[in-house]
Length: 128
Image 1: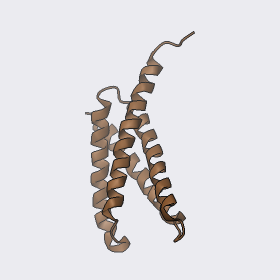
Image 2: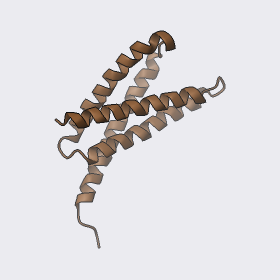
Image 3: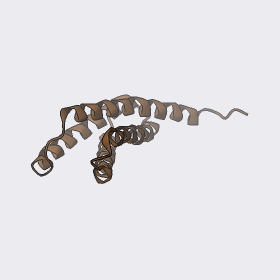
Image 4: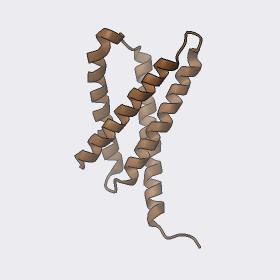
């Protein structure tokens, strides 16, 4: 296992999730409703899939195992961070947390698969 890459992946995912959450908070209004929430999940899926794809391109050995460890490390750090700031920000509804985890697992599957495919495509000769 390449722990430096796993830690870098976890920190990249955490940073992306924090920035997305901050953007959602800044853009939300009482009238925004469910459209902003769904847009946030779609943005999270796209951005995290891109992060997983970039990671998988550079991880030739067991990219899914490395991606799962990176995601688990990110979730652990995010939960600890959430517990630390919950006295100031309040709690997050469990359904929102569960949906975000589903989005992250989907991003792992999609992004890592794309990254593996791109890595194999880059290594093959060009069609001429």
